[in-house]
Length: 156
Image (cartoon, rainbow, N blue to C red; front, side, top):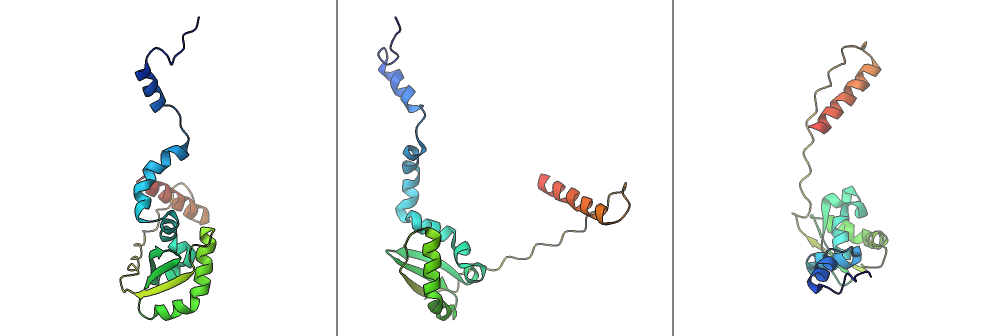
C-alpha cells in the first residue's frame, strides 16, 4: 500500500509547494511591480532604447523625459527644438515602430541644456603590441601580436 505524500503532514506540503517549479510569468509580477509603478513598460523600454530609436546624432542632443498618455516630452538643447518639430512625424513613426504599437501620438519639446550627456572622452591610444620574437616581421606577426594583446586585455 503506497502512502499518499499529501496526507500525513500539511506543513511539509506547504514547504514542498513553495519550492516547486513555477512558470516565470507567475514569478515576474511581484518583482516588476515596483519598477513599473513609476513608469509603464512601454515608457521604460522607450527610455532605455532611445539612442537606437532616434539614432546617435539626435540622441546626443535629446533625451526622453516623460510619456504621459500618448504624449512624449523630449528635452533638447537650444535650437534643436525647431529641428525636432520638423522631424516630429518621422520620430513618432520610429518610436511606434520600435515599440510595436502606437504609444506616441504627440511630441512636446522642452529646452533643457542638461538633456544630453557630455560627449565621452576618447579612449587613450594603446601602445602598439610587441612583436612576436619567433616570427619574422610582417603582416602575420602584427596580426598575432594584436590578437595576443586583445586576449591579455580581456583577461585583465
